[in-house]
Image 1 (cartoon, rainbow, N blue to C red):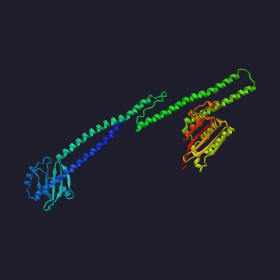
Image 2: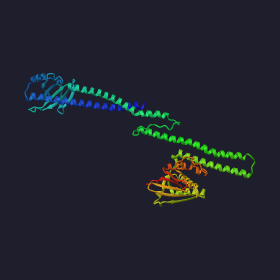
Image 3: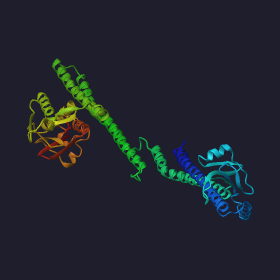
Image 4: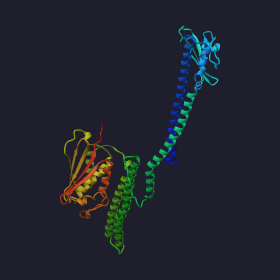
Length: 457
C-alpha cells in the first residue's frame, strides 16, 4: 500500500475515533443533564402543588380542574401525594400510584428515581407546607421537549461528525499527496542516474524540511560515488600507465640482451638492472596498495593514544637509516608543559608513514638534503612544520601536488611515483587533521600538518 493511501486511512481513523468519543461524551452528558433537569422540574411542580393543597386549602377537584386547564401535553405530568403512612391524600386525574411498602421504606432513606410505563418518576419526602407535615410525593412525567432536543443533538452530532470526517479525509489526502509529490519526483530522477551520468543531481528546492534534507544527503552520496568512481577510473589508468613503462623497459632490455652472446659480467649487469627495475615496481605496487587501502578501509584503522614527538623521532630514525646522507633536525617552538599537549588519537604506524614521506620529500628535492622540523601546539591542536630549501613550486603546481601520480617538470628526473603525498593527505584526513603547503619557486617549501589534541579528561 502506498504511503499516501496508508496515511489517508490512518490519520482520519485516529481523528474519527477521537471525534466519535468526544461526540458520545457530549451526548451522554446532555442526556444526564436533561434527566436531572427534568427530575428537578417535577419536584418543583410537586412542591408547588403541595403548597396549593395544604397551605391554600384547595380541594383535590379544584386542583385537578386547574391541571386540566394547564397545557402540559409536553410533559404529561402526574402527581400523587401520600401521608407518612402511605395513604393517598391527592392524586391527579391520570396518575397511577406506585408506592409499595418497599419503596416507602426506601424513600425514608433517600429520594427514589426510576422509569416505568415510559415515564420518569421520582418519590421524595417533603415538609414544604406551613404545618410541616411529613408527606410522600410521587411525581411523574414524560419530557417530550427534552427528548426532542436530545434526538436533534444526536442527529447533529452524527451528521456533523460524518461531514467533519469526510473533510478531514479529503484534506489529509490532498496535503499528503502534495507533501509526498517531491519524493516521487526524486525517485524518477534517481532512476535516471547511472554510472554514465553520476554528475546529475537532484534539485534541492527546500532544505528546511525532511525531503530537502534527504535530497541534500543523496546528492552528497552521489558526490562521494562520483569521486570514488573517478578515483577508480583514474587509478586503473594510472596503474596501467605506470606499470607499462617499467615493464616495457624490462622487455626491451631482455630482448637486447638476447640478441647476441654476452660475457658473464654483462649478463650479471643486466640481471642487476632487472633487479633494480623490479624493486622499483614492487615499491610502486606497495604504494598503490597502501593508497587503495586507505581509501577503501579507513574505518577499520585502529586508533590509540600517540605522542606526536615520539612518532617524529621514530620516522626520523627510519629515514636516516635508509638514507644516511639525509639531515633531519627536530625542534620545539616551546617546551610542552605536560605530556597531554603532545598526545593525539591515531595510528602510530600510519603517522610514521606520513612524517617519513614528508621528511624524505623535503630532503630528496633539496640540494643540501636537509629538512627542519618544528613542533608547536596550543590548547586544541599540535602543529608540525617541515621546512626545506629545495626547488620550490609555483602556485599552479601546489594546487596539484596532492593528486595521485602528479609530477612537475622540475622533479621528473628524480626517482618517485607521485603517490606519497596523496597517501599522506589521506592518512592525515583519517586522523581528522589538516595538511597544507606554502612554497616559493627557487626558495623552498613548508609543509604543515595539524592534528587535534586528544582530550584526556
